[in-house]
Length: 124
Image (cartoon, rainbow, N blue to C red):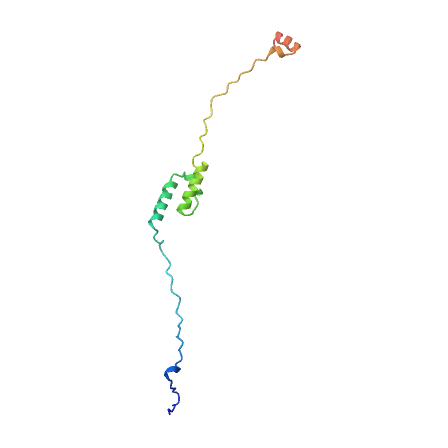
């Protein structure tokens, strides 16, 4: 019928074997590192501007107390701190700088013992 030559095979239409697809290893994709911050949505920019405007009223000596978190958290922190009165301390009333007046109360002579009453009559 058919002769087979060396190194050659004959296949019939129903005898086909599926061949495995060759998978070549590819180097991992390079992830670009951002050099500039990614653009933020308009709402985030507005929130950041609102936080900056709100925190601009903080006195300079208290600015180191502001936490380094996102704008929404800074606004929450400011509202909580403002409620405690940190940024608006109560006014201290001015003290009277005048010299205090000293008044010596008059002793009630009716309550003195008899010997003390007689000595008062002779003078101190």
